[in-house]
Image (cartoon, rainbow, N blue to C red; front, side, top):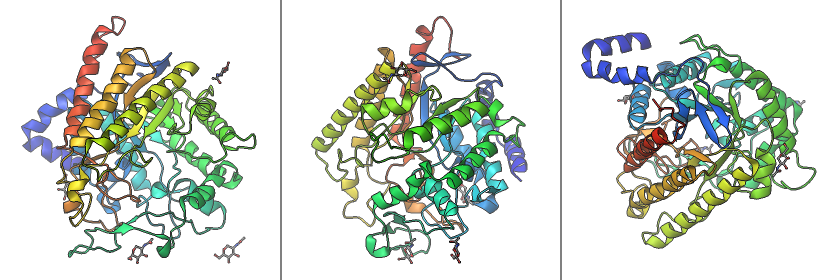
Length: 480
Ligand SMILES: *[C@@H]1O[C@H](CO)[C@@H](O)[C@H](O)[C@H]1NC(C)=O
Ligand SMILES: *[C@@H]1O[C@H](CO)[C@@H](O)[C@H](O)[C@H]1NC(C)=O
Ligand SMILES: *[C@@H]1O[C@H](CO)[C@@H](O)[C@H](O)[C@H]1NC(C)=O
Ligand SMILES: *[C@@H]1O[C@H](CO)[C@@H](O)[C@H](O)[C@H]1NC(C)=O
């Protein structure tokens, strides 16, 4: 059905055929793997600067319609991102759930039970990678998750302990009050302890048994083995032989308390899992997925391992208390900008100290939501984005400057592409999903980047500026 749809579109639409030519010219060659060279990344085309975006739901959007996918939306959004010069997507290569009904997570999941896969969702991942490859986009493949929105650690622990109930922390429940008149259109609210929500600390303690529970680790390693040894059903490439896959990432934002204690189980886990991946995927890179918010010692302990190819950072000013989306004055914005610049400076220096590149693979800011404060929903897309645009220029500008001055930063990847989705027109599908840029445990629309947002032009100008820069600073090798 998918192939038919493409065929008929190509026949009836000239514009589509013309658009496809530059895409296919930029397609990734079968041996053009990304390599680390000191503080830089390189491909056959020369130095590689990442103009990335988070697009975590790619495997679900690319899945068949019967599994909640939407191929026309997928292709439209990939083309939109490619048109803005995006050359990298950070996507999920995992999601877990069931047999108990698990709320607040991607649905349907890739894995229904240990070793039991939804083949149509797996084919979604194949399609996603194939479509990315045609557009010259590389992938970070995230293999698990600290947080509940894809199942992740907590689901593995639940499976490993006789389906123990997961102590979910406060999460966005789309069916809570207030509800809109038309069923399945939201809005909803955060769950509270009254609804049975656990504290985040309790949830993390549960999830972080991942570093010591051998049964859960066995399930996780089996998953890694399965994904790495997969052959793409669209283009026939083995995943470990596909340079579209730049990086295997251990997990999204793994956390650990008591990080400086000798008894800590987190560092040995990073070492074990990264070595396990390296052995099976020697041509591709490995990153941990750390936010790098925990300071220099933790940063260096995690990223200095020989099986970790580059460092990562995530920068969350509102979540960390440095920004207030209801403050229209410039003060809150200024605090956010100041914090962000210092964070980029510090993490770059730490990465230089250990001689590895660093990738800012998550950051975001809300819209001017003080304008929505007294409206039906605080995250309406109608709010302007003056703070967000200023902040994006600051953050992306700081990373580009760092690169040009010989620092360790090698690119940015904002959170997260919502493309054509809007909260105002959202409708939950039969799996309870709306596929916003915000994941299922957070308020839809909070951090979304829409196709018409100025932030996408800021992303685009980054790519234009950096490719111009690389043309003259690339050891004589022209970037295609
Ligand atoms: C798929 O996405 C398009 C937008 O690209 C939308 O118009 C259409 O309604 C979606 N289809 C389904 C089944 O959700
Ligand atoms: C697992 O849970 C079920 C009920 O949920 C219970 O009947 C069974 O005894 C438990 N098994 C173990 C080994 O705890
Ligand atoms: C979400 O909210 C609805 C309505 O209040 C409630 O029935 C349901 O149990 C909630 N779901 C979770 C997982 O808390
Ligand atoms: C990083 O590891 C190397 C050995 O691989 C060691 O020589 C160096 O001191 C370490 N650096 C830091 C900052 O831990």
